[in-house]
Length: 241
Image (cartoon, rainbow, N blue to C red; front, top):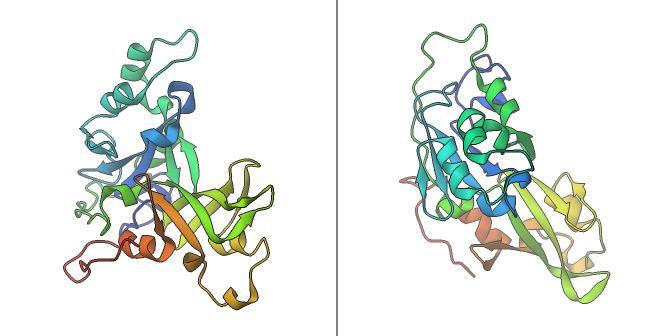
């Protein structure tokens, strides 16, 4: 889940989408068995255009101070003809993807678009530390498994409908049905693409799903609450029902 940006749109070559303080990054499928398992939070430490001084916080609890270290620790394979150690050192960004909005972009594109624009100030404003979500680092991921709380899978009537939720911000998500790769532009589109019991038609879409976090299913409304920034005014507990 990415952050919002306080900086002018001209700071990065690619515009506002590339000047956020943090992004979700993952190792490309060519270099690992399951990219979702490698998702981590990449944090720019000193400036919106500086991708040299970064911190990468893995969901496994590890922290990395360079992209090659993160890739080396999370890669499990390499395409034929690739020397993983050599390529990781010299071309680290081709090994990863970065979540821009709700779509994964090749890391080398991200690197190029994050470079200073021609009208970037010589000294961009310093970055302010960002609070983690109330639920912790696990809620910064970009990809989550979801299931309907009320609808069943048409091909397996005894099991709930399931899908992947790609998260930019809590109010900007994309839903992908993994077996067809068909995507929906919002959670509501996915819910109402199938029959909804009339007595639930006024429910929020978040009330109609469960979301898997750290191997446990929680309600959509609980997920929304735990995804909010942990601030002095917003630290109260949210029941993990």
